[in-house]
Length: 311
Ligand code: 13P
Ligand code: SF4
Image 1 (cartoon, protein in one colour):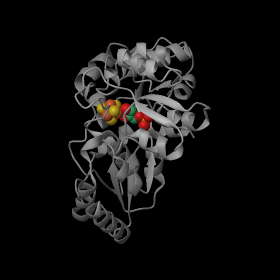
Image 2 (cartoon, helix red, strand yellow):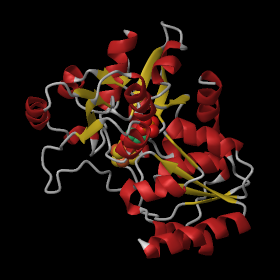
Image 3 (tube, protein in one colour):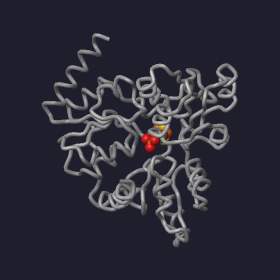
Image 4 (cartoon, protein in one colour):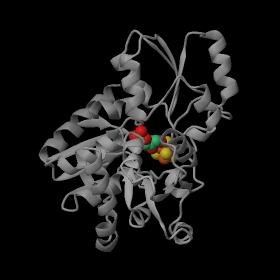
């Protein structure tokens, strides 16, 4: 604890000296969320990265988020504390295969979730996040056919909400696909009043059983506005830190995955970062995120469209 405090003080000092900001996703460890200049979901973080006047952005999130920050702010130095912070969902959509898939539907436009590589964004017409996806899709004329990538659960959820018939890429996230309905129902036996709240990346049976479905920030808002006292949370466990902070009187139970020895629901990529790596990243200015100008130019267009439509 004492060591952590020393590290925190060093990070704060260095961040000031270098005019740097630390942006953290809600799925980060509590101590990282607490030291960050800004904590948010993927939409909040992309907005923040485009408006900050810092020279350096240390991105405590996953690669596609840091890439989005770099695409929006090419003049800034964007750092990611651990280069292996990937995303199983983004990885489930390889560029060459997706290009072939897209070419089979020449009269469709591509809406892709922000959880994609910069190369996929360069093949995309409009990007979205789970927070603004319904709004983005509803802004597209009804007769315009759409390909949605890469998350099949979010895609199917969006089809059911908007009444569209989007063609969906068959990708998924290793955290959200793993929640066990059976184990959730057992928790419900012990806590009959607990509400199940779920991210739309969860599989259909979890969505059907859920009392509320929403993006990370929508789930957080729900826990603040809802009158309930107990919640089973079917998304990455990092969000429980903000839920507990904002609702200290309420009980939050992480939804258990099908197969886990620890009984937790951590994103193995998000959880690669720690305070030491954040300090090293600031000090040595590593690992710098770079995007080729050609990809950046193309990937910027769908991100900007998303930001305009969701402003
Ligand atoms: P949000 O868009 O809700 O931040 O979700 C990002 C993500 O990675 C979900 O797993
Ligand atoms: Fe990607 Fe899933 Fe981790 Fe979100 S939780 S960053 S979708 S692997």
